[in-house]
Length: 214
Image 1 (cartoon, one colour):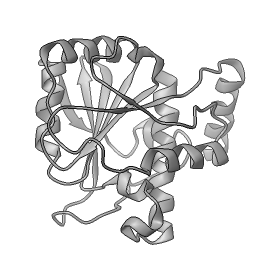
Image 2: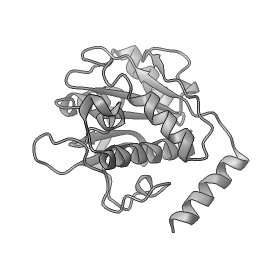
Image 3: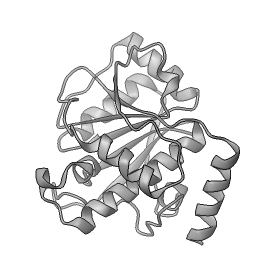
């Protein structure tokens, strides 16, 4: 099954080769600048393990940037407050409706504020847990039990939530997982190699899935 998925993904990129770019969102409120090595490590890992045309440098980007459409994925992580002004929210809404994807990665304490920030963009949106059979958990690497656990927060299971505008998935929100910490240089959090590997593989799946939307 995984071989068929990988071959299908490879065929997709043989026919359509958009350059995959990640933008690190410089939001108002909290420590948007954290996870300093996470995205560069994820991009390098993806370049070595998956047939994806990647821009290997992350770019820091403002929510008000008029050219957000150049990014396949926007990434924001943190430990607390995140908010968007009305013009920023409208700009992000346009980007997400145009095929972009926003990943909000809860380092710890970020989760409730991230939900509020998403509703600034889509007041009518709905946050739903993604089941383990969602395509994001099998589009490259298999994750039959859903999101992997990287760091312990409050002794709860890890969960990946989707934020939907109608039937359209426009954003992802992690909880009790801390993927970005698993992408960081190994000496920073001292995660076991197999845990870092799972975090990086899940990151590849997110990139693959985002690429099919863009």
